[in-house]
Length: 359
Image 1: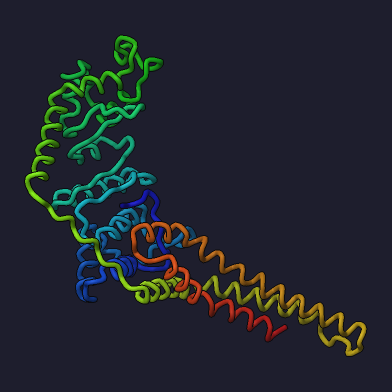
Image 2: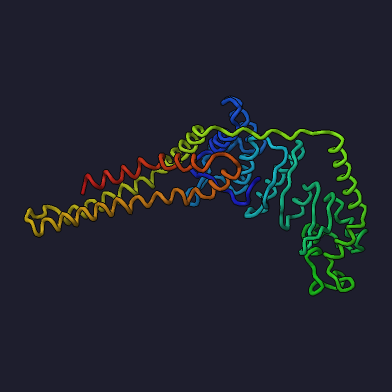
């Protein structure tokens, strides 16, 4: 299942992202088989030319929107699934990148995979890449299910509508199924009902609906005649391997972002010099000396506590990645938590040591 939003660790390369996904999912494969599968996915998705490019963040330039979407698809393709579900794969893409992604999906469908996805108002050349489409009215009724190329024939022959030339089929069909009796022009209202409801009632008695029902009945009859064994669930990787992959992946992503480390070290040095200068050569007398030393210990403790709050950012940034990967069964929550915490632990200790040593 490919989510609508593309979420990645921005400092990893394309090949590393797919390789980590393969290591977490292909437990029975050897390292050579995993790497071969990753190279094959890169070739199929047309990402070989950006194999070693970093994905990028909102501050650092990286892959384009279309390349990120294809990378999201690639993370699911490493397991070589038979059916792939996608949630609005063209959302947020310009017309060129949207067409590039849809042509890539079309090639996957021609290779024997079943792709099911939702999409809103595609351009005409994207509509031509569809094999089968399902049109739903605003009330959830099926207005059409069948070959995309025959959808306009159904509108003209079945519903009796005249289709103007040079019209985008996708826009025209969506306008029809969303029309209610309260809106639309005269040719989109029939006997007080919207065209969407009229299309749904017409489709139920059409040859397309009869052919679809016949196909479903044939499949059900075949299932009754033949005892098909359910595929065995894919074996997940062990807890230690999950922990190791998550920790090494996060460590590599952090080490490639030195700016964050330098900023935190600079802040620690600045506040250490500030507090050290304020309490420099405090008196050894009992009355002011004890109070001053208590103040130093208070600021040291407060700085140590608040500086570690920056570790929460690690979980906030990785929340979307964690939700997607855990739902896909890539690792357990405990493996992710332990691996992430142990990976992040050395840096806060370094910041506190610098601050305490200077102050």
